[in-house]
Length: 152
Image 1 (cartoon, rainbow, N blue to C red):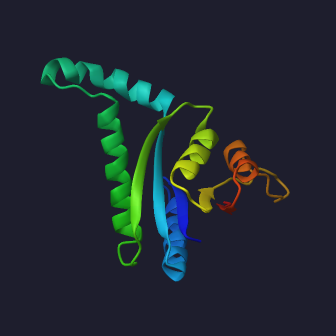
Image 2 (tube, helix red, strand yellow):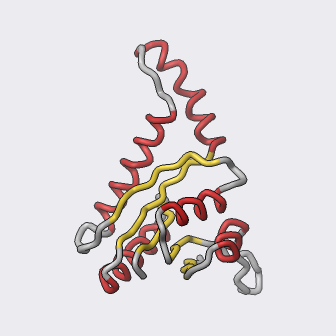
């Protein structure tokens, strides 16, 4: 691996996967891209909730505010998880359409020229058989490189 992309989030599984990706990056001398996302519907809900504060404070809470927040959350996660590792990383904050998370992951992977993607997936079968969720499955099928999926 020369450059890996990890989709980060605020769960224990995301933390564990980030640590694994960080260790893998150190072992291979690779860089990481931490993709921090917010779905468009969540952005709109939060934006609507903050409109009252805009009038009171005279401030504006636009898309850049949310991207900065995503960056800060990803940085805090990196500080908590991979700070002790000697790994270079950059943070890519994105607000994405609800149905296009996989497309956004693949677009960032292409733009950042990564050769490995790390993503959290889901098991959905009552018999324990792993069935990938739409995002993980779409990433696996759409990416021309290695994909590591952490299943619950």
